Length: 161
Image (tube, rainbow, N blue to C red; front, side):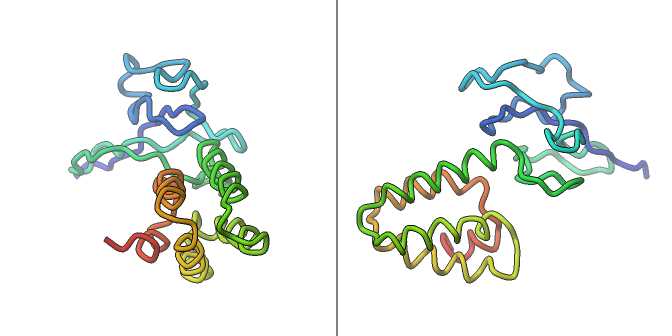
């Protein structure tokens, strides 16, 4: 049985996947995203390690490629994770149905929602309680921003179905 390997992915800085097979399928490469116009990257901007793409070989079949939120070599968030986290924080500032203290608590909870830490379940539970106060449109907007970067543990607490 041959060993598999990760191809390199190309993702725009806003998180749109260009290709999960940058090295093995050069015909799909793009300098800029055709969805938003942002530049694309293939390497971590902190440590220069390749962004992990599809796993090739080893008898594993393809599933839709989702870019990772964090670099597995240096642990830093990728630009799309930072951008979505910032958007969620900015939206938190706009929520009228929360007190300033609740908005601050919501923003602080976001860091643990995107990471799988011992505080993730606590943060996700807090987040769920707070977004219940803001109404469905705002809660839906926060969900749209966070769904791709939230940890699996947080998703199970916040959006169980």
